Length: 122
Image (cartoon, rainbow, N blue to C red; front, side):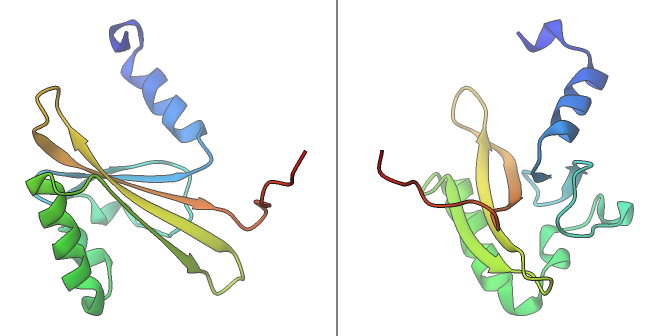
């Protein structure tokens, strides 16, 4: 069905989503990010290794996640962080696979969950 959409329409749809999206290819390079930003990222990050956008202390965890995605051991990693302005952020890393299950890269999706309230019984 994507053939019914232009590239500009797909880009506009992705920029409309209230999440911060970043796509890294199978070589761990950042190749795209959405217009909605939670984390400031300059255009210069395009082409960089994903590790270069994180603290060196987090590289072992990133390496483990990427290895698990590439091997098929995992497809999702989720964690939470608090920003200095008080916002609570959920970050999900998801493996992107082709129809045969081959690894194409990963999407990082960050969303502001500060105002999300737990479900109440009905």
